[in-house]
Length: 315
Image 1: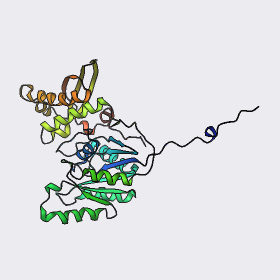
Image 2: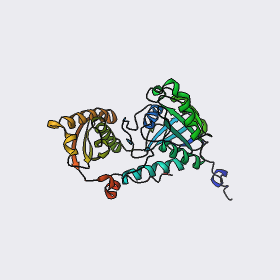
Image 3: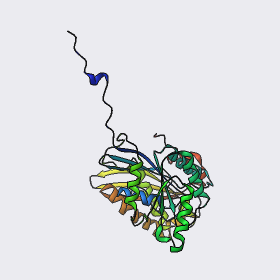
Image 4: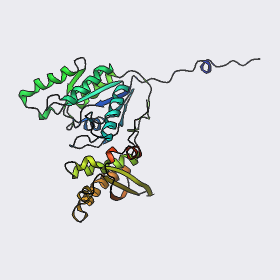
């Protein structure tokens, strides 16, 4: 007697589909509030934030899962005119994320009229053919008489896109942004576990936290000439984590600036970073920072590759 083969073995059932699932590229020129907005949506600090432009250098995934929705935000570097290999890399990964996205979130700064970088981003969005939401940010910084002209100018860049206004740093308008984005996502699979917020390793997040504190405490060209590499990350016990990291600068003259008089600034950077790292690891942290010079590292392709600046191939 021949045993019958279950129908499910011949025609396996498809994977469960969520009502809304997909990737959202968060794009815009530097310093318009992309990372701030993403952190508010997730309710956690995933991306570092700084008032200085070009803070984000790598794409950073932020994963929002609620009920039958999984929205995967891809926070990208600001699209700008690059001046070195690092800048070229940053623009390339932003453009790549934009072209691969299911939905595009175009964040702009309403306190200024659109500039050439905004126009470049808008052109890429129009060429992509993907659904887009224009998030007109920093409404608290706009003079009342400028609100309508500025809003109209940005809407004209992507006339077929949905749009809304917000103040990302206060969270005003953020729920509406999330609602409209979810509506645009197609049905699809659940890509990540429901409790996962990012695909970035803790070690990489630690290096970004340290870099953020350097940026907050330095001025002019120094913040942009800084790279951070975590050399050691060891859990020495259930309650203590050792982190050793190197802070790289491009010039001999920049090293003493970061160290400060009598090591005061480096100590301040270390204290601020350690506070966040202890929250990240849920342990006490022993943080050891070293400042090193790697001349013109932003134009050194081999160094950039070592630091992880290479195009993602996730999708």
